[in-house]
Amino acid sequence: MKLRKNFLWGGATAANQYEGGYMKDGKGLSIADVEKGSSHGVPREVHSNIQENEFYPSHEAVDFYHRYKEDIKLFAEMGFKCFRLSISWPRIFPKGDEKKPNEAGLAFYDKIFDELAKYNIEPIVTLSHYETPLHLVKEYGSWRNRKLISFFENYCQVVFERYKAKVQYWITFNEINETMNQKEPYHQAGILFTEGENHTDTILKASHNMLVASAKAVILGHKINPDFQIGCMLQYPMTYGKTCDPKDQLAKKLFMMPDFYYGDVMCKGYYTNTCTAQWKRMNGNLEVSPEDKRTLLEGKVDYISFSYYFSTVITLDSKGEPKVAEKNPYLSRTDWDWTIDPVGLRLSLNELYDRYQLPLFIVENGLGAVDQLNEEGKIIDTYRIDFLKKHIKELIKAVEIDHVDVIGYTTWGCIDIVSVGTGEMKKRYGFIYVDKDDDGRGSLDRKRKESFYWYKEVIATNGKNIK
Ligand code: BG6
Image 1: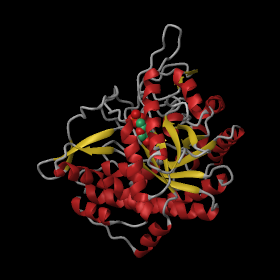
Image 2 (image 1 turned 180 degrees about the vertical axis):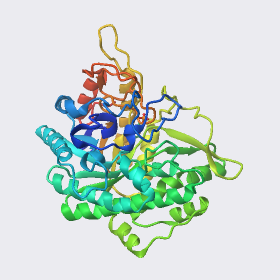
Image 3 (image 1 turned 30 degrees about the horizontal axis):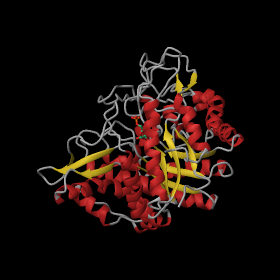
Image 4 (image 1 turned 120 degrees about the vertical axis):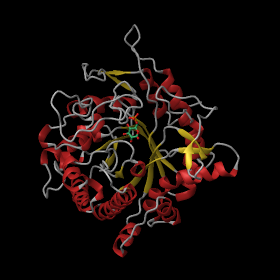
């Protein structure tokens, strides 16, 4: 087996980290618009409203809203076959619960898709990437509330109809499995726990509502255009048991249960034994109505997209629950303390393909690093090239040696954008440098990094230049 001839090489972004224009043309606030920036290891502060004199990184981000032509031209220069972006839900439905969409918001994405089409770049569109309308959080309690399913369905109906001739690849929820790991403020399900709230109940309910919403989106999308390819999106944390002690291997299995929980429902169409065992582990339960069961089964996804950044070593704690063990002595780490594990990508591809037998799409991978301009004003990011080269090599092995079916590969933050974890700008992933710092200062000028030219060659040779 070889990489598909039409392998989708490209880059990925998300509206809240890239677009800016946070109040432009009728857009409403999303949960990302009230998150302040922070730094490594410090959770981002979340406000209930925008406060004067505070800096919110999403508000301008790196201004794709006004610079999309310039950026898409640069992507085309690299030879991108595809570009992953998300639609900002509150740009289309400012509050989220309206009946009628915001025409100016729809027109904005028309311009983007038309510009991409000019260069034959396939859009890969995430419907919800940490951008739930803030109004839905305040008025309805976000995904805790089943009403969000119909609001989401309405949003999908509108964008599917509008872009049915322009977009073929869709992703429902970014990293949906992060819902179970609701440590970070807001990000996934838009939930901040209240005092005394039963976390297990909330997480299981919110997850169920999102899973049903995703299945309904798949059903609806296929009705509107049978050629639509609609995928789920998982964060895939490659894990290793700490030793060959069987208990450490059990730790790996237990650690992965919450991740397979979402994958199983979206790919197999029902709550598997892994899911029901996970309810038990969490000391919770879920009543699933016959109607929801039918929806989940009918709304199975066409492919699996996933993010892969690092791997983790797992062992059992004294209560028999998995916990992250010490650092992996065989691997180096990034400045943000993420392990660098290219072989883990090959293993992840194998694990996911073995379990689900569905085409896979790596929609996020990359190195967040501090880039410095040299005396000539250039960014020679050989460390990024090295990181990506090693990962792409393993991706090719997964296809050619292990016969895993992979649709494409989009590096995360192909142009520098705001970090989700910290809101920083200095954690850069891009092939294109953006002049902006953590306090919002800078000209926003774009500059090609050394990796820009390298990736262009990767795409031009369909990966054959990777030695
Ligand atoms: C993924 C998210 O979890 O990781 C992206 O889907 C995010 O939105 C990416 O940006 C990298 O994380 P960070 O914290 O470096 O931005």
